[in-house]
Image 1 (cartoon, one colour):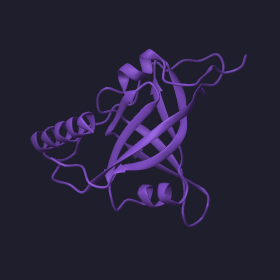
Image 2 (spheres, rainbow, N blue to C red; image 1 turned 135 degrees about the vertical axis):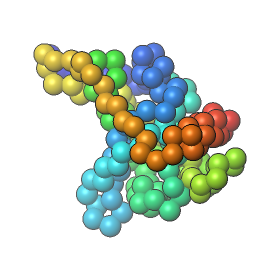
Image 3 (cartoon, rainbow, N blue to C red; image 1 turned 120 degrees about the vertical axis):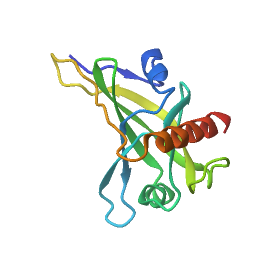
Image 4 (cartoon, rainbow, N blue to C red; image 1 turned 90 degrees about the horizontal axis):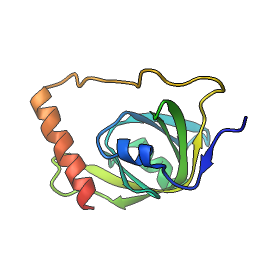
Length: 151
């Protein structure tokens, strides 16, 4: 049985990408030309065809995207695992109203592929806990997500 492929986010994926969430991001490394995988959490589906994420504007992710815009977000949701493939570009060099130097990156989605192995489903989605000041973490998360929504 072939895995399902869509040209844009399906509603359950759009819905889960309306708040901070653990995903992995794959880019093409600007030095080696090989894959580079990073875990990120400030991610937002702007619409069914566009995903925003925020990262430090000095990040290797930004260097990679500036050299090669191809990117894949790996998302575990909806009892499955999805590869969201697209073209990334820096939309904003530094997000306003955020105390950190965060760039806003936009991915224009080309394909959403269910990549879960046959005959299985995800029963528990990844969870994480902030290991620094919880109040400060919540304040920063709110600032970043609000800034992305306004962009």
